[in-house]
Image (cartoon, rainbow, N blue to C red; front, side):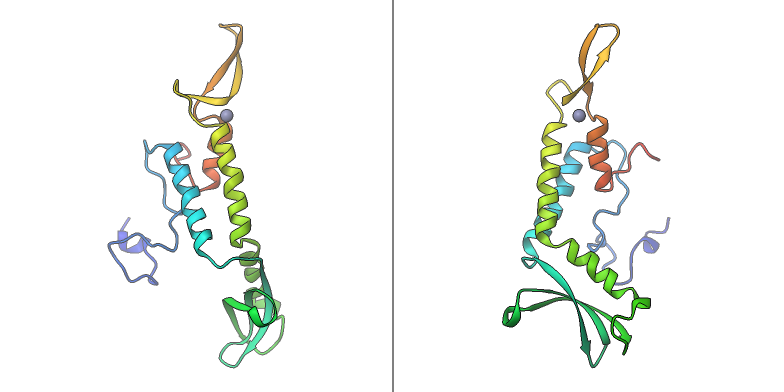
Length: 174
Ligand SMILES: [Zn+2]
């Protein structure tokens, strides 16, 4: 594929990966699933830690330049901060044909606190289903007809693979 075509126009930086979509890249063959997943979680944690503390909420705000806009806000009264502005270019309030409010709801539901909670839960999964020194899952076992006992499942187990896929891991699916 022409590398030019994989890049969105909005960055204007040709040699760098588009930082707007760091997780949408296809994972390379042989890439380590454990390191990759830890890194994917860390990237989201860092982004969430740098973002404005929540809770985030949505609001219909009329602005002269954009008409009714779906806004994402945080804080109360005088402390209210505008975080995102999704213009509809419409003068109708709650103009549902524009989908701006649903997009704003989606943004607000993914506020930093909720992302950090999710990341913390995923880190627990990462520990539980991580790789032992013998290359096996810390937790999962399966019945072995030859050994006639439960034996550890090789890493990555299904749970770990599902966790990684949730972050965009694709190896083995192509
Ligand atoms: Zn496991």
